[in-house]
Figure 1 (cartoon, helix red, strand yellow):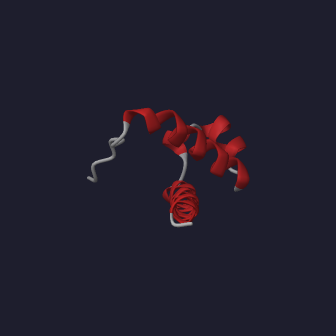
Figure 2 (cartoon, rainbow, N blue to C red):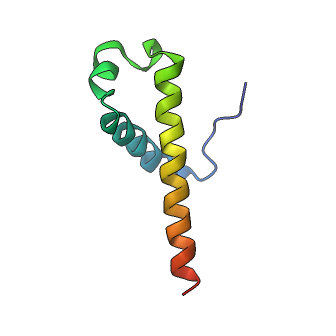
Amino acid sequence: MANRRVLNPKAGRALDHLKYEVASELGLDDDIQERGWENMTTREVGKIGGNMVRKMIRFAEAEMAKRSE
C-alpha cells in the first residue's frame, strides 16, 4: 500500500478542505454524507483524488509563474 502521510503537517487541513471541495464540485458530497468515505466506490474516490491532483498542479504552476515574473 502507498504511503499516504502528509509531508507538511500544516497542509493537512487544506488537503481535507480540497478533498471536500472537489467532491462537492463532482456532485459526490451528498453520497459521502449518506454512505461515508469507507463505502464510496474506488471509481468515486479515484475521481476525487485525480481532480485534487489536477487542482494542485494548476496551483503549483500559478505559483511558479508568479515567482518567475
